Length: 294
Picture (cartoon, rainbow, N blue to C red):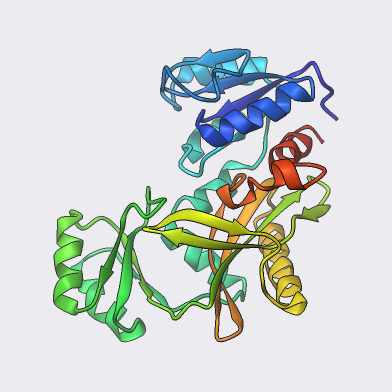
């Protein structure tokens, strides 16, 4: 166990990192943030701020020397930086799990490979993939960039092949994932904490409403049958175990025709879990600190 008084490292210094830092400082830990933004929200509450690129070798060296354990607050933290740090100190979650979460192609493929339910999708890496993709995914559909998309960014609705071709070209033909547009009854999320020994603690399943791709309202517990909530919890736990995940993990799911489909994962606390700060004995951010420190 890493006891209070130790220094924890945080790769990324946004709003979720700020809330992690507040939880860590409240529990008695020091925090060093690595973030290129001089106005990093997390750094305002931290005891140290390495104001450089995430992959800067000098900063990574200092973080590894100074910190008893390191975590991240966003899925686009360079996985290679986390893997580099893991050779010298404790990193949770690991770079391998983050690498899966930050690439939609790898993410969707991994979820499907575990036998978990997922909606129809196809990978489009070049124009020759468009025809086979349309054979697997019915239109209308949603085209998403494989990397660096969040809060509705890197997404476009396409209703025809011509529209798909045009959007793919407009996006400079970066690798994409085409997902069938489903008739959703609800969107839900499961937020859990998984320890290094495999122990799992799960918050109540949340129900989410989005406006223009950005979370607007969360209702917790979700207004779904208890059996469906138990199934969602079981699916999220299976996924965390398959990833050998250590940390706080959010798993977003769709309810379609009374069935669950896994949509995507976030290797960090989640906006739909902010209610835990006030509603639960232990918030998702305190759980992140507790898992990190054992």
